[in-house]
Image 1 (spheres, helix red, strand yellow):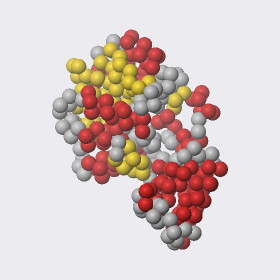
Image 2 (cartoon, rainbow, N blue to C red):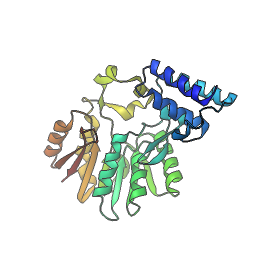
Image 3 (cartoon, rainbow, N blue to C red):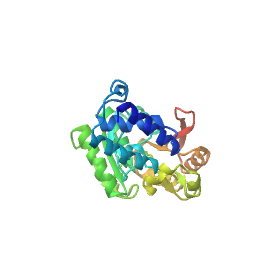
Image 4 (cartoon, one colour):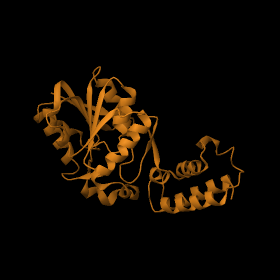
Amino acid sequence: MTVDRALQMLTEAFTLAGSQTARLDAEVILSHVLQCKRHTLIAEGKRPLVKAEIEWLMDARKRREKGEPVPYIVGKKEFYSIEFTVDSRVLVPRPETELLVDLVIQHAPESGSILDVGTGSGAIAVAVKRNRPDCMVFASDISFEALCLAQINAERILRTKAIEFRQGDLFAPWHMAQFDIIVSNPPYIGYEERDALPKELFFEPEFSLFCRDRGREIIFRLIDEAGGYLKRGGKVLIEIGAGMSDDVAYHAHRSGFLVSIYKDYAGLPRDVLLQK
């Protein structure tokens, strides 16, 4: 089997399995096994695959046909132009969350302190620290397994123990601490939406995706509790789901916050900025 034939075979298989990004999936998987860039696959087209490469591709094909996300299959995902290690312990970083990083970088004061609540793979915390090395960055997650992976990413990418990680629910690990910026990409999908979701999502950690109160429970908890952990003039940045902006703004106003809503690159209300 040549590279060209493998690419065709994978694309057809993923299309039949219902993937909306079949060609891209095939290119990412094939370039991973060949250890090359996607754009070089055409030049490699006539190259025959060795037995070990074919066996790996057949296994990857089966996993993707079952709906497993491509980043879990190849073990990595690019976010904010940084390659993160990912697996089923953590949510796959999404492009729309890059706006949250932009906003943290923009609003963090010089030498400020930043807390990433529910860090998962560490994508937000690491991307912020890499672009704002002047800031002190802290991160926490309720999942010990997720924190282990976040620490691996932080130490590999930043080449130092530049971020302090702690385990616990929301602000529980940070008793008496205060920060200039609190940022979070919390779970915000309601359980009642499960039946309408693509099968890829069910490979990701449930606690990172779903919560009660139509997906608003954790967001509202963050708003209710954040005030006690903010320095004077501090700000809170939270990613929210579609159709939530009015409810979140109303809840935040009742908690004494000024509210700004930011749209993502698709024009959808995606992030809220809160300031006392």
